[in-house]
Amino acid sequence: MNFKSIPYIQRCQELLDNAFARASKESPQKKVKTFSQILRKHLRKVSKGWPSLDNMPPFYYTLVDVVVGVGRLKKSLGAVNWALKTLDRLSRSYNAEIRRADRETAYRLRKEFYGRAASILKAVEDDLMFLGEARRKLQDMPEVEDTFTVVIAGLPNVGKSSILKALTGARPRVESYPFTTQQLLLGYFEHRYQRYQIVDTPGLLDRAIENRNPAEKQAVLALRYLANAVIYVFDPSSHCGYPIKDQLRVYQEVTKSFDVPVIVVVNKEDILGEEKGREFLRSNKLEGILCSATERRGIDELKNRVIEIKTSLEGERIPPPYSPE
Ligand SMILES: Nc1nc2c(ncn2[C@@H]2O[C@H](COP(=O)(O)OP(=O)(O)O)[C@@H](O)[C@H]2O)c(=O)[nH]1
Ligand SMILES: [Mg+2]
Image (cartoon, rainbow, N blue to C red; front, side):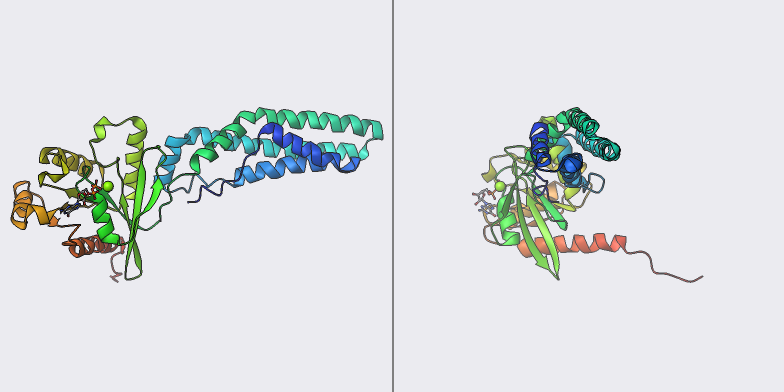
């Protein structure tokens, strides 16, 4: 989804000034045509340059809705289209009249056309302003790939970023989430020509959803559309600074709100010890993978589990074999 290629949007007056400047260089017969062409060319660029809201993946749709409001955006794009059509119709009829008119009448008709074209633009001035502002806001929308995606959740310091690095090797790419403080860290690994996208979400999936403001709630909602699976990281050693009770509460919340498979990881096994790690899982009736992100233990098992989930989800989509009567 490329929000960075949304074209620059001129202010109403800027656009009119440009059109006047260009038309003034033309012969009288061509002035109206050129004037209207300049306006329409820009309006068409504005209207066509936006990613289509109807085909937008729900992850982006939700974010666009939080950042600028989908309803308002649709209204403004609709207004631009209206202006485009109205200008087109108007310039055709004026051009036809001007062609038949004597010099004096042609002059009067041209002036009249400029006035009417300017009022059409003035009618959508607020919409152009809004779209210009929306464009600016959407420029730093995070770029995510449309591929199998695993979102990492868990309280701060449990080792989410370390797990991401262990799984994907390279330094994660940082994308800003459109709510100032939040970012998405993206890492990738490949297996049998298939790309896996792993997303760490500092500040988003690391505390209770109930304590969030509406925009953050929407941000979490958008993540739900992005995730094909979730890795929930526990640190039952006391090192992360959060009691197990809190970690379990957020775990319950995440499993409830994400309608996808959740892989439980018990991290920092190097400090905790295998015995205590297994005991933690047993006593909480969880199934999970013991890992040490820093010592790279359990990471291959985790990776295999991710691959397995993708394969089994694909399996669901394969239609049953054809069987004749
Ligand atoms: N001993 C040990 N420390 C770890 C492990 N994973 C992460 N850490 C440390 O725990 C701290 C928090 O890790 P980080 O990945 O930043 O946690 P996040 O806040 O959940 O992303 C860092 O100091 C890491 O080095 C682990 O498996 N073993
Ligand atoms: Mg982190």
